Length: 201
Figure 1 (spheres, one colour):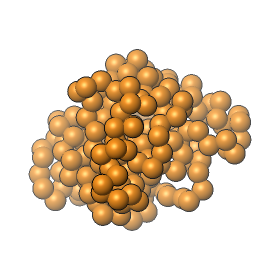
Figure 2 (cartoon, one colour; figure 1 turned 45 degrees about the vertical axis):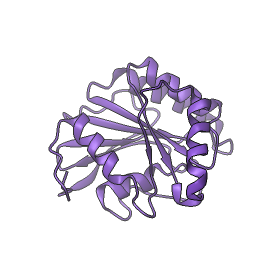
Figure 3 (spheres, helix red, strand yellow; figure 1 turned 90 degrees about the vertical axis):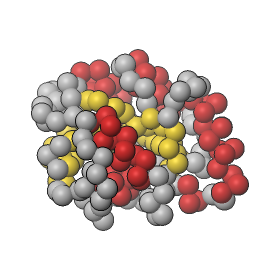
Figure 4 (cartoon, helix red, strand yellow; figure 1 turned 60 degrees about the vertical axis):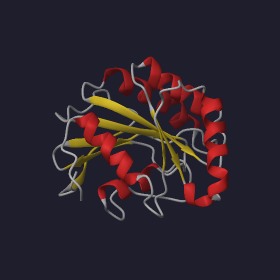
């Protein structure tokens, strides 16, 4: 996919009753706070700061829909698992994310992001189960691969597989926003899922 245009199309808060009808295939990105969802989206759409990044965990407290080429919407789900975010927000995110996974007419695939330096915890396992129960086979994106030695990657991926209890056919993509390693594989998956052309950019 050649990125010709990208814009923030919708921002959905926890009190929003009705999800937007984008009329486009939607690809959702879920993950723990500070796992690198916004950095991933910026890398995919080749923009430095369209998706707002922060070193402060829990910064994304809305569902943000990014319209790419009027062909697909990338949906950045709120990060979970950060205790210092106000408890009322935390309690609202779960139902909001679960409702989106089960009721969005346009949702075609869900990518679950996991930091390569952290073994998935209960929150990650719960999100994985929600995705599966909603009828999707999550693609696991292992982020921040530049933060560990190459020799440590295989072991870290195995720990992630075991912690999440993924099925044998689960697709796992190793990614780094810094080096852009893994971007092509993710874009190919998006093209395949959204029915777009797999053009090189």
